[in-house]
Length: 147
Image 1 (cartoon, rainbow, N blue to C red):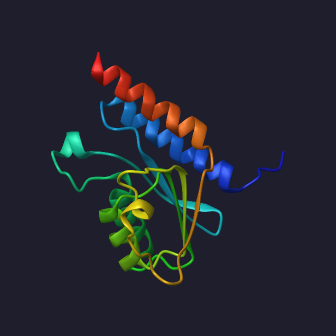
Image 2: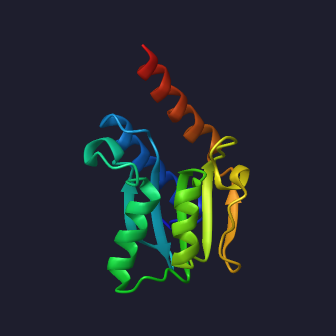
C-alpha cells in the first residue's frame, strides 16, 4: 500500500488534533507542521488548560517545530491548520518565515485574511482543504457550549 502524502492527508492529521481539543473542552482547532512529507509538530488549542489566550494550536505547533528543527525559522515547512489563522498567529507565522500555510475553514470575522494581516512575502496560503469537516466540528462545539 502506497500512502498518498497530500494536503488532504495532512489536514486529516490536523483534524485529529482538533478532535483532541474538542474532547478536552477547547475550541476545536488542530495543527500539524510538515517538512519533506514528515510531521514534525502536532498541536491543538490549549487556551483553557493553560489559561493562556496565546495558546492557539498554531502557536503551540510553531514552538514544537522550532524545537524539533533547533532553530526559529520554519523555511521549507507547511502548516496545516483546521481554522484560518488569526492575526496573532499569522504574525508569529510571518516571523517564523514558514513557507506555506494550508487551512480548512475560513474565519470571515477574525481570520488573517479578513483582518488584512500580511504574511511573509515568501509564504503561500491555501484555504478550503476539508473545510466541511472542520466547519462541522466547530459548529458542533459551539452548539454543545450553548446548551
